[in-house]
Image (tube, rainbow, N blue to C red; front, side, top):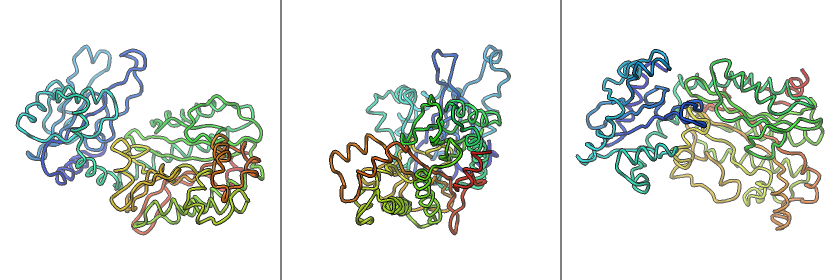
Length: 462
């Protein structure tokens, strides 16, 4: 945890932005894998972590705007619990850690909520992303699922997004710690990638690096020779000469802050000429996109810059043709680059996405497009100092998508389908870094992870 004063200040700032009512934050509970006592690794709700800092199951917090007080609900563990769990802090001691003076046992929460509702007080809720939260809210409010939807507070969502988007110096330090672990994971993956190795051997080792140093995974690692599948959790392929391995992984610190990095590298230790020419296009787009990041620019503009650079590079290889500006405007480049340039990063790898992607990545001046590819852009709004985000352009050759577009003769004026046939087995290349928006421009987070062709080949051959 940070110092308790940080959580007190965060709650005070939030309280000052909400007009009135109670703000209810449900912490997460344990989730069984196959029976109640055998659980998945516990991960606390990120918004609860942000305001209360306590990373354990069975907690809930209330910020009372009108009466200027905070309340923590939780369990007082019995001797029988302690036999299995070891010594436990009292609920009041946990409250002290978070700077909360008032504590009640968890079974008092429903009564507290019911009394507030009877008095006509507004209770602000965030959208539940776990079914257990939906059920719990139904019990607390005597509500059905439709009523639960009506209880969600847009005012609270927008205020929290505004507050959490700008990272403090303490938070940035945590992201840098996560990146330091992620650096080791990526270098080790490059060193291990040899013909005959299975993807799961690499995935197991790099995930172990994070665990062995007190961290965990920010998300399930993507370690795949089939980089054309954007989110590929399968690790069962054997690496062969001529393959490229796409490694999209990130560590999470003990306090929940994430890193998210992607590198694509040759299994043989050296890119083939065809792999190299595509890689260089992605690398140029990524570097130029990072250089364009600064306060006041819309991330949509940065995405479009990367898209144009990708289309221009592909046109130089004769895979695209015609008016490139028009091709990008119409979305023809999305055959090769069908996702957004990046997303916010922080306590979640897709920061605050559970609150609603449009609240996090868009604003009144920036509306989401319905165009294929561009519709998947998670972050488009104007950037501010303190934002931490990912920059991850890619080029992918997805046989099924290529076949469908070719059959439909889609964008034939911009796409050379005959030549693409020679690239359909290339897979996908993505390069991703984490970037902090500063007062004057940007800073790439952490020690640079090799991404220039010469650097990557040197590590792969070491």
